[in-house]
Length: 223
Image (cartoon, rainbow, N blue to C red):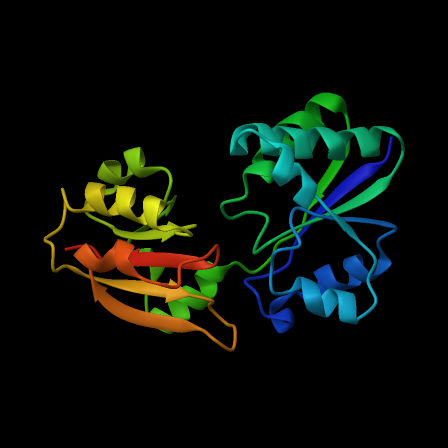
């Protein structure tokens, strides 16, 4: 049996990768990225790291659920062949990373050694930029999980993966049942990157922003 080590590539700026993670990346004989569509990846290339990614799995999968299952199955198959796999994900392995949740269960069932390193997520940067202390109560949700929004009444919300207008619109409709149209939210894009954008907008304009992508989130303060 081989083993799987999971590391995080941080929120986007190369300097936010932990030193422990960097040492493991440099020493990896089998380095696999969940996706190469992440700002940290280009600096890895420039520094000479050799890696493969699961980008092709995105093109072949029918939905995200099957995508994550296929990625985890491939990682386990490699480890069962004896490979010492380093699996790198955007942000932190412990924050909003479904493949890591699946790996925890399936690696244990398969008897494969799994090590998950602590990493920095975009949340730490967001808290610093907005002057928010999470101890006051914050729920972090994938914007596609709109059905879970009503269960978070009374606390501030961080909606991640607001990467297209349809998703933003569905989330906005649900939020408008809880907040006034003019409730001020923070539209957050490309945190810790040179083109970082943090701007206040009324809730009703949440799905009208022209620059949404996979590095966009929305912070909704509680009433």
